[in-house]
Length: 274
Image (tube, rainbow, N blue to C red; front, side, top):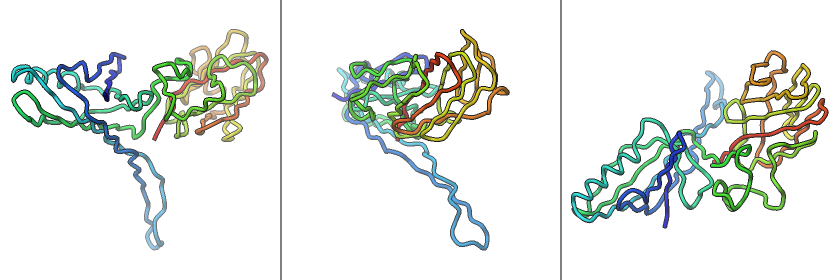
């Protein structure tokens, strides 16, 4: 049977089956909603393409509710409202794609009564980011197909190589982005940590991106690139860098970390899916 799980921002979870008498019939994902903007120049033919972004997508969940009597049905309605309506957004996943979650707000809905004891209701969730993300995070949840954080099929994994993202020793790295969207720290969650002795230069040879720290790391120092913010042992140090950023394309990214002796690095992010 299909199951839908709600995960609040504080990590608490609830499945629809926990609501008395509620049964999930189907989940319909409307898919990516591309929105392209154009600019028109007076006196010129056509338009200038200003690019495409993904707008809010609608995920519809269809439910059936069956109760013992009219009072039980009324109580089940209230339990449904309490479970689903919230001031804050929350994540939803469902059993067909358990490794991918969507951050959503819920739209108003009504119950359609079949009898005094049963009815149906359709819920539209607004996935306002326009894309889904992996439930697991690479620096917190090791890639393990037996883990509930990941799914064997449909998440873009290569199964013939070990995927390692933490405590990587050496200067030549391969980082795999299993999603189908480029990880860009200006827009997405990406944390890179570097340790070693020397002046580090981090390059993605696949994209040409580079990040340079102009001072020297000592033993025990940790350089972290948290999104767009470089931190040395937790303190901002952007003035001591080239202000560069490193993105990760879908698939394999060939990474080079030079200028350090005994380099150790970690890459923390969630895979993103159209």
